[in-house]
Image: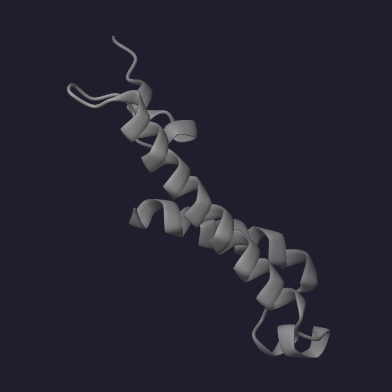
Length: 81
């Protein structure tokens, strides 16, 4: 049984070495993906954080759910790249 690093969850969505790719192009692509994830996380977190507890309750989430929802948004961003 061989180990395939591409199936490891820590590397999901990131560009791993392929034949003919330079490390610079991989690094730039990974930076772009990371930046998009980071932006999605912070945008979601900030937009939900400014809502009142009542507004959050109206949409069915609590303040404690905000980090998890923001992480889900970031993971969705990673899958879309």
